[in-house]
Each structure stands twice: as structure tokens, then as C-alpha cells.
Image (cartoon, rainbow, N blue to C red; front, side, top):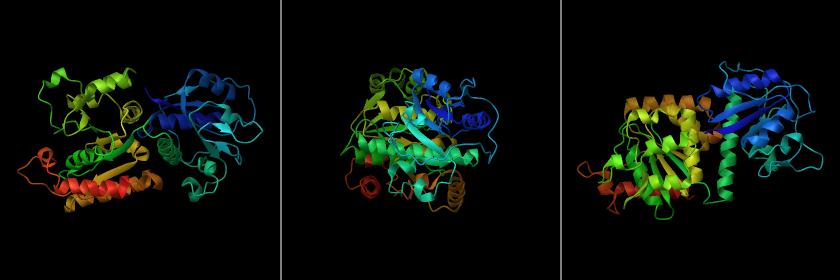
Length: 384
């Protein structure tokens, strides 16, 4: 049950190439449809909820007949170009309508979010929302590689989602991702401590994407309880409602959580794109203020979510081999994520706890160093 990304440009070749590229890219959490005919786009929007519309201005009501296309198998060539339109009109992101009197056909489409394709290069200040006109930041330059276009789309989409959460607080959960490519970094210990600290001021939900989790299970038989496996199954069937999710949440004195998957194979039933869509769906229907997402070290499962997170905390260690992994990861992310997404990733060094005391029991002690560390992180990053 992916969100829909509709891509519009009157150059059919340009549309098809982007659609094929994005549909096969592991970091695109959308079902992608392309349109070179405005009438087709209008008709499609009447029966399908468009989460994100990316497109050039419709210069005319063209008469060519070309249906929507989805999920083909070739790739978008790097640096490919296509004709388009320049844009200097203002619009309202929230209403999806033009703010000028003359009609702007692109913004008559009832899409939840809209991003313009610009013929002129977009300065860095524009992309980061530095201009005086806030509407102008939702533009991306169309004459660049498919990789760059998709990366900028995800960055702008993440920025828009962040703005939306602030406007209607409580309707959509914030997302705090805990990820590290190195082992024994205190990742899970920190995720649990962060959840405990946050629950003093809000209603957080702990979720782990680890294939094999050390999360403490309740006393009752695990086979009689709902787990993340069931949540993923219901999501894939389009049946994960808010009420059904509440039935899967376990409440105990430490935190509210969804139990981990029953078997490692269960988590592989969703592709990386579907996992990103699943987490976004949890944010919408959970009714929680925040979701703390504990992950394993598999980057492909979380990379698509990095632009959408409020914060990503990356536990690191002083180990030389571990530092080499971190350096390689930073080099990779710097080439594949926009600066806006990179600015929301923070490396942390998680303090050790008593090796003879479980970290769940340690959190019962209000003076525990780990809890104090989590409190400091909350103050410096989340409540800044």
C-alpha cells in the first residue's frame, strides 16, 4: 500500500525514463506513475489519492493519448534532459492551488503535495528554504541526473512532512531513528532509554526492525500475542487501521512497544520501499507523539527513511575497525543524501552500563548514566 507519486511533463520520453528509474530505485518509497497528457493526469487524480505530484506546468491541453505507466524495468540514464517550463508563480503548498489569479493547471490537480520542475537551476538557498518567499523552496531543477532528482524530491518531501507535523501536532508521530553500522555500540540500549525518557512528556512507541531482537518479551506465550509480523501483514493487505494497531501494542511499566518479528524471514516480506511506507503509515495511525525506531545494521532498509526522520541517532565506538565503517558510511551518505537530510543525523557515544545488570533493570535507577545521557540528548536535539 504505497503512497502515489505522479510525475508530469509533456515530454513522454522524459516521463517514462524517470518513472522507470524511480520505480526500480531502492530509496523511492512511492508507487510511481508518469503522465505526459494533462487529461490523463486529471482523470487519474479523480480516482487515486496522489500523495506527491512532481511536474512541469501544463502548457496546453495536449490531445495525445497515453495512459499512466507504473513499474517498468529499465533505468533512467544519468543526466538525461527533457523540455519543460520556467516557473515564477507562487502557490500554496497546503492547499495545492495557485496563489495568482490566472489558472495554473499543475496546481488544479488535487495532490497532497506538489513540487515544481524548474528549467532554471535552483540555488542552494532556494532548496534549503532560505528565500523570503517560502513557496519558492519547493522547486527542483529538471535537467540533472535521475539520482539527483530523486534525492531532491525526497529531501523536499521530508521537509514538507516536517512542516506539516508542526502544524497539526498530535495527528502524526515524529520519527526518531536509531541506526549504526557497527556492533556493540549501545544502539538498542540507547533506543530503550530514549523511549523511557520521552514518555515523561509524551506518548512514544518503541518499534524494532531487528531480525533477531533482545527486546524483553512479556510473560504470556508470544504465539498468543500480536507482533510486528502481524502489523506488516495487515499493512500489506491494506488492513492496518488505527484500532487494529492498538491491539498489537504491548503496554508495560517500561514502555509501549510492538513486539519484534517472530522470525527473521517475516521482515523480508516487505521490500525496503515498503518498509519505509509501513513506518510512514505507523506515524499516521498510531496516535503517538513519537516513534522510536530501533534498526539493525542493514542500510538498505533505512536509507529511504533518512530524509523523512526528525532525527537519526548513530551510536559509534572508539574501535578502529568500527571507525573505518563509519567513515565509509559517511562518504556514501554524503553522495546520496541532500544536506538537509544529513543535517539531521547525529553521531553519539553511548555510555556503558553495569555488565552484571540488564539495561532494562538499569533504567529503574533514576541516576543511571544511560538515562542521564538520554535526557541530555533529548534536551540538545529534540527539545532544542
